[in-house]
Every structure is written in structure tokens, then in C-alpha cells.
Image (tube, rainbow, N blue to C red):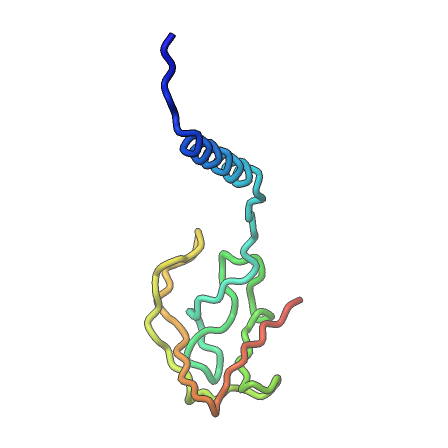
Length: 125
């Protein structure tokens, strides 16, 4: 019976490539999934939050909605409000919107400098 000569180095590299590919496929199959619940969704639409030109409360389809979910914009010092003159209502991007939400047509425009830092406080219950 006739035998063919094979390059042992080539066979070893192909075999090791298959072992690595199999290990990565097994890891991907057993990896945990991210089944998360949307707790809050800020789309900046709805009634405006005085003194800002956009709505700052969490809206449906989030689990937590209502007046207790309003964002607070501070000037880098907690409790000190961010200047309304450095904000504007800008056009939104209707992309990456959760299921059940209306298209995002409004966004919060922020005009900052190194002298006016911005902090966002999200109060949790």
C-alpha cells in the first residue's frame, strides 16, 4: 500500500487551529446571556423640566417612570444646578430605541467648556 508524505509541522498547525476553534466555540455556547430589564429610559421628550428645554424624566417602556425619576443636571458640584443657558433642545437620533418606545426625535444639547463641567445625578429608589 502506498503512503503519502505529509509535513508534520503543517498537520500540527492545522490540528492546533481546530482545537482552538473548538474551545472558543464551546466557550461561546456556555457564556451567560444578558437578559436585562430596562429600568429607566430617558428620551428627552415630553413635558419640559423647568428650566431646561427638554423632558428629563424616565418614560415608558421603562419599569420606573414618573416624577421621581427626573435627572438632575449639576455643575460638577452635587446639588448646584447646571446653567440652562448651556443647554438646548437638539434633534434626536431615531436609532437604538427599545421595543415599545416612540422614535427619539429630541435630544439634550449640552454646551460645555472646561469652566462649566456637567454632572448628571440619577436618583434611585
